[in-house]
Length: 98
Image (cartoon, rainbow, N blue to C red; front, side, top):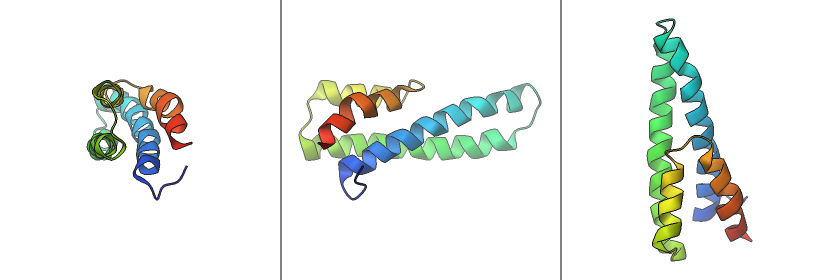
């Protein structure tokens, strides 16, 4: 993975965003079952920033690599579904980097 390219940065963001999504899900029981709000707030803010960055990088790559609307839509939808950014990296982005 080359992080000095837009595509490499998107691949890295996809992995980190996916991890933050899972982490956010793990902090939910702390907030709602045990009333410990701080971890959820911190992880939630980080996840929100990573989510926005991922979406921006998808759009930047859309214009840079001239992706079709379908591919761009799949990549954007991936940010809404847990674990899907990992799948997108493996099936779309990794192949594109070659």
